[in-house]
Length: 158
Image (cartoon, rainbow, N blue to C red):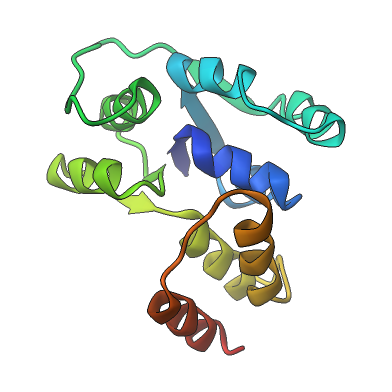
């Protein structure tokens, strides 16, 4: 199974020390060059930087068609959508609303960090979703509506 990731999910998963879920859940984890550039500029703590540098399973690929799908998207999002299409990826890991809309309009299957956590719990890779969502909110500028928060916890059986 192949997943292409945007920048913010990688950063969020590093911040909550759950980045290892990606290679555990997916056969191949791919990022476009623009995402690698954005990750290199991320403001990681020393510990987070060590974790990021250990992610040697993150495969960087160049996008063959550099047409930006939407002027409202940053380069990483746009390249991630194009690369997901180019590779016929099983999923695009993306959380930003505008990028998710464009991806869905382009026929790309999406999953976000919350969805990833739900799958991880279902597969027994994590025991609790709530504590990780709370950590996302506290550590990575992650926003989730109260309604979605409650629905996710209900879905997780918490």
